[in-house]
Length: 370
Image (cartoon, rainbow, N blue to C red; front, side):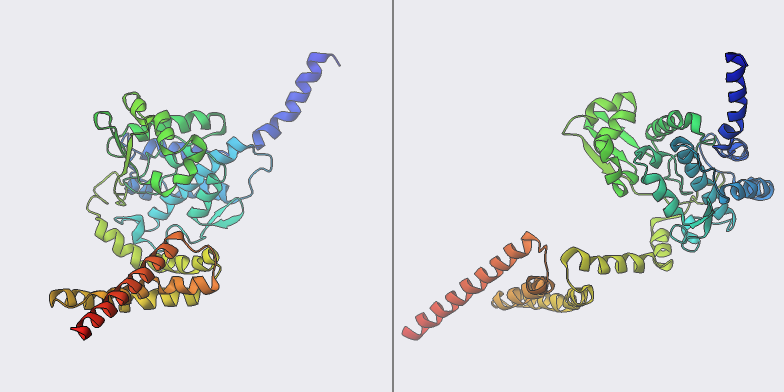
């Protein structure tokens, strides 16, 4: 067999393997082109009426085992498409609604099957974040009006870097989502940059990332140390092509956040993290911390009453100070990693107590000798 023929035979043998090393995103691509507007809003009604079958067929492909030899670019593209397609499908399961927060536990419940695993949307996003590419935050879309633009084409391995660069620039160039004021050296950007600040460290931090992808007239001031970064309020209204989501307010979001159990979950996570942070029993520390709050409030009320009546503020100040640091007194006995401010505050509290006591003793001696 001649050399050219041998190479051709090898190429033909390898071709099926090369094709098998990726997923087919063409059906998702067609849905995006048909049902996402140029403004990156989703025509959920049209999808609900005539696109569910196509979308479910695509998600069934994502649910099954992925080719073991998919490369990094193919996996990244597939995970982005999975997050966005699953989010759209979750909305369609509850449509019509004003916000994704009107659904039950939209981000943390492991209800979606991806590559044979039961994952939550947060876990899918987590897999992407582990890849260390902050541009993914410009690509994953959580069905909110403040989300980055939902790209009107599927991400594919061969072009994923080009697509991510382009979508990041589109996101930052949209004045509704990110605003740059060179004259004031101020950038008012998406809260995503605050929530995931650590993810942008690989790019030199948020200002450096913004300077790389922001509109040309904003790049110079973003590289200056004096640049000011402000974060916009996130609009969680549905990214619907119609009117749905337009009247969803911040108050509605907070009410839905609490109703969905996220406030409780956040409080619980904070409570349990205390043990790891300070090396103490979180139940004891948290109980002292929370239990001291009403006594601290009463001490402040006592202080205000004494000030209004011209009485000494020393006792209520010391009392309030004690309850303010009471949980940290427990740390001094049983914990570790005690913040420096605790030592400073306790030192100031003791010094104030000694000073007030000495003054009171001197005043008593002076009155007794007169």
